[in-house]
Length: 229
Image 1 (tube, rainbow, N blue to C red):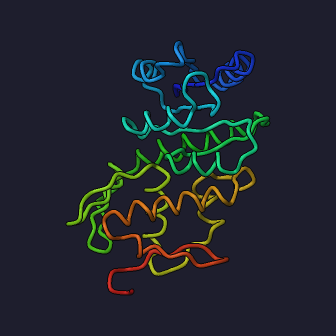
Image 2: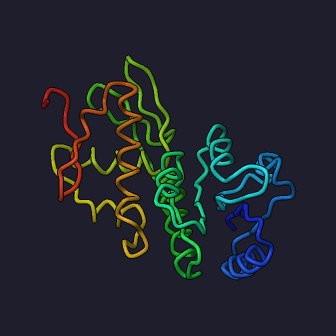
Image 3: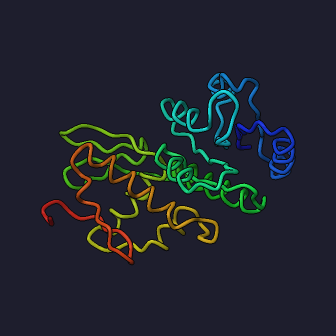
């Protein structure tokens, strides 16, 4: 049974989500103190975190930063605000997905299932160390390292990188990446993929590899080999 930490201060919505998620055999936990969410996080050790953006004391972005400083647990944001920047900020902070309120519960379940399947089924696969452009990629630890340093990627970032490297020097279409990541493109904004790829490229730039991921406008993305630039 997967444990979900639901950081939502609307008690009516929390109760409804708790009942619906429990009916899908998820173990749902709430927050006892919105001023100290990390205490509940550390005690519960959730498999997935769902965070509302508008919260008392500190907003969801604050708690996402705090969680990401300790863990790569998958995070899904909720927001009732109609601001595209909310989704962009969420992804830049390392969230795995974003759900706009009001939402149909089937959409939320689909996103939860896709996220858990991607993260935990992927982790059970045998993943050998791979090399690319002089860097070593550890798919189990979500790290990329070379003489310039080592970076740790989120689950989405390492998954995107893996898909691109497996087809290096060939364009991987946007729709193909979306379906691989989220299983059903009907529930995913095209901008969600753009933000994730841009974040991946920015992280790779820290160790001099950002230039090896190229955008092919109107088509998708391509991972180049060293020496091809």
